[in-house]
Image (cartoon, rainbow, N blue to C red):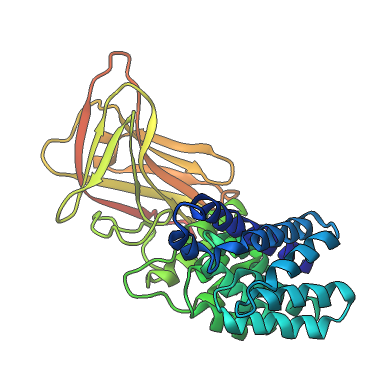
Length: 389
């Protein structure tokens, strides 16, 4: 694990060095003052090349060429007030096996230039090598901030440390600094259903009116793992919805904020479109050219008989190209289907005992002669029929 993290650091350092070196080379002769914006003293292009070579060697698992080190030493002597001589000294001490002295040299370099990527990199490397995960993670957070896409690059490795409960206080402190590392790490953890508790513990209570970027990933992974009840509880807790609420969420189509899949997912595609209306209700159009889901949500119905009713605004369409379907989520088997107009009087269907979750969907269907169908649904009801135990 530590080896992979160090390789990731090396890749980040290498990318940053390439950008800086290219900028310096582009301006060093014609606009030296602009080159200095990318690297303090443009004669240090050679040092930049050397640091890139070191990063490449680490990433590829090769020993650092002694000639590279000597090259850095020679250039470092030309800039005694810069952090580079301390980096050079640290590399020398590291290669000779004097790791405590190497760490002190890298720390001196960081003290002189807090935004020095090589200094941060070598310190992180040293901390993880000697098992000081707290300080290693602290340097990781800085690297994530300084390097483009650094948070996304480091997230898979920080996620491994997050699985150890003992590291949670340290990670919470690091996440509070921002820079996207928290969301990137939690999103990485959310891909694994077994890490649900870890994500919820590290994320803390949700901000009012804001859903977390990792939540769709978590819900999707839980559904793929067929942990429907857990997914529903997580969804309900993040949106302050009672887990034992009605069988169907948002029957009046007035609550767009809670995310699908336990709220309505509304689509616009080649089959048609579905959209909430101001003040409530659902406007649906089927083009009659292709089959496709236009609206739907996941249900957790117990085995038994149910009755579904849809109330309309205006005239009820007759023989429309719209159809209600109930599908077993684990198997994608259609359990029941009915034309839109049947739901006016009540559409009855049966849920079998071997289906833990279901998808209720409104489909646009293709007709022999394509013809547009339109409806405005103002309210739906789903109830369990008496005598189901």
